[in-house]
Length: 379
Image 1 (cartoon, rainbow, N blue to C red):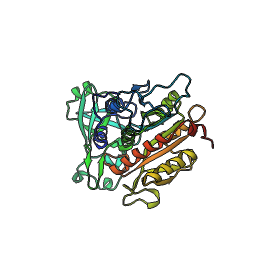
Image 2 (spheres, helix red, strand yellow; image 1 turned 90 degrees about the vertical axis):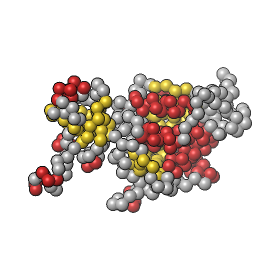
Image 3 (cartoon, rainbow, N blue to C red; image 1 turned 120 degrees about the vertical axis):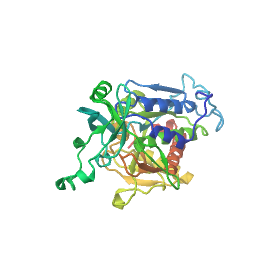
Image 4 (cartoon, rainbow, N blue to C red; image 1 turned 45 degrees about the vertical axis):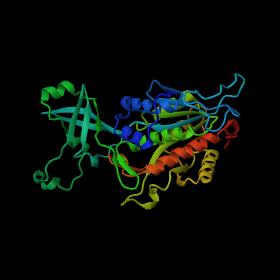
């Protein structure tokens, strides 16, 4: 661990991550932010060939040291003997990629056409500020016909993405020189603090999950844990959970825990389809979730007085938990989610209290994991 630098506050990290750049498949810039932030809390940090940022915090052998004795730079405290059983491996996965856009065509006069990269809500696009990442970063705006010039037949039609353009303000020859078909485009939005501990911004899906992993490592610094913890900021979740698939295959964890977001309550959505904000993170139940891990997490939450919400997900969860569960010969998994409003927009909204509670819950669960718990993971 890098004892020269100090950890930042989790909200400060979420702000940096939210304003960072990392469309699915192009996560390099935000990955470097993750590595720099996590370095004071980890023993090793590396990037695999797909771009996953794998942050390892080693555990301590059972029976060594006192609670809280693990110091930065100790690289896991006492060394395990060669004959000692290997430490349990817990993999935390929060994806750092964000939805975005991609240039498809030059329209002339500095206008470019675009398509989406994995799920941008096209209803939100008119009026957005964007950055085109070409030979250099080019600012742009997604404009719209003035209402005065709309024909009556167009007035009540939904806008299609293919009818929109990004206006760069560049002359045509310069636009073609610095912008190419295939360049990715990020939506631009500053992190915003709302009232009562609520925050809003882009890419909380799932950089809020990365912030939860960070909070968990902050809390683990105060605890002794036997398990080696792999906090993985995964790539390409939005394109098919590819990063979790490859990183879990390489790490071969005994336990996998995905941290993602779920639908937060807001006007216009049926209550049964959402969870309220600031009432605790959710734990999923269903075929993707190992019942003994869920039971242990619920017990840790109850003992610590951490409020928890339950979410029934009988099939594949559509998260990194699914990718981890079916890796190699199967990995026991769990899913912790943060209620989030306005998902896949630039004003995704969450409660910092839920993020901090989720991090504390994960730390307490990890501190309880030992070899006997892992060996007892049977259906």
